[in-house]
Length: 630
Image 1 (cartoon, rainbow, N blue to C red):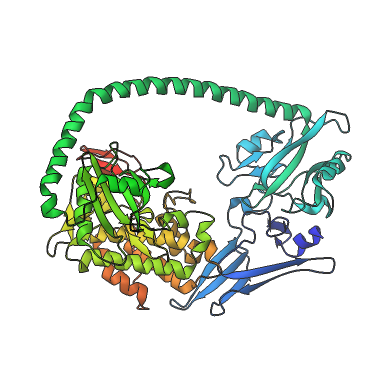
Image 2: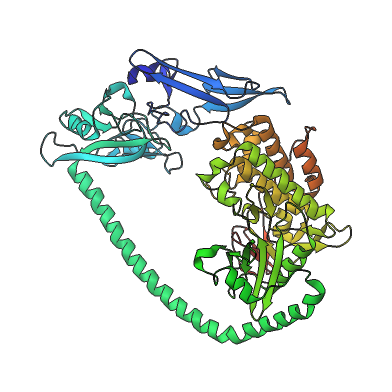
């Protein structure tokens, strides 16, 4: 039945040449990396029983027009969708998708790694049949065994497991749907022509065995374990190499720990030497705050004992997390009100200046989409802020978690986007101060009990007077990946640099991917480049989070991607302000086409020298500070 399936459905021929093969069906998908998978456009069904074998698909949104075409070009099979706004067909999927997708590109017993160098590599225990051709990147002759096995001679042959393989061409294979993996191994072992075996599907049931050369192999995210037959000596050599590697790793670890110990001792002496100066500066800054607090700080003051009692003396069980400012604790006041307490740490990457900045700003800001500050504590060396408690923590704890992300359907994500935009609009335009946040990111968006978002963490925010909408600084602080190009390179911040950060956050919400967390294809070194590539190629739906397949309004999501790219344009004057963004999100007005985004940050200022934005430096008055989530 497997042979029939691959011949009728999952193999594409070009004239008399087999051109593409998706891989055997595993129970929920094919073992080819670009086989059928969950997607936001259509549902599919595959039936393979004793009476029939067929595949069908149904569009999830009846208003979407989609068709499948086959032609004689390099992309033999394409799925197209109709885009009414531009009256054009957009390519949603093409086969083959990459160079490893072409049938048997690495020849017999060769394994294809799309990110490998070289792309084709022989299976372990095999070597190129023609080294001359192989080194010239002609892999068509494939690989042969480096040592033949001694069939049915005890302890002379065995199997080596290959993890995550697109299973070989099943033309020369045999299957049994009820056989266990151990029985499958025995079945292969008793036949001298058997070269590999595997489970039939992902349920770890059934048996597939292959005879002769293994054809059309590649590494696959949806692959299975494949057990390849080889001489016992090859298995032993590989195991010994692994053991030697482990020994070297232990030696390196021991040396590293020794060096680390010496460095720590040197740092300790340095700390003791500078400690007196540090605390003198801290005391002077404390006195400055104490002198001004009656004039500037419009928040209720709490004494240390009250907060210590509320947090069970800052118990680890009450700790919610820790960022650049210091630890955050959950507490309960005597009247039953739940609070979150942010406590300035003596080793904080921030300082009293940021603390004072946040206290003053938060006392003057009131909006449903801004986190509410309830009070502060200035007692001795203690500096603490009290916030309303947000039971669902921060947006990143949902958005970048593979389990909790499923709770964020499209309607909820769209609501969160609109609310964040309205909060930023208030900061930029409608508050009695004009505030530029400078550190907008997913970890600074808190979620209340009803998943309503609230912008938090104003330690790095800046006030602008009157109609001022921009400023500059030599002390550049924030989070790499969210900074606008002009801010990272020249210290220029404005409402448009906040709009840039909002654009990054928007793309993260739509895609469910963190800006710098993944390795993207080609030159896509971040999520901005990734989105721009799909938009430029006319495939924005490929960018949408697969978890949204059952809830996503496709046209609305594509519109959001376009808005995000408009916010991310390289030149600030090309970006919309937040009032325009709010209108774009809440209406169906025509949108301009975005220009190239500013994701290629050329340089930053670092003590007068040119340096890559990929570097991280500490906070001081003239350096770039690329902080982690606070």
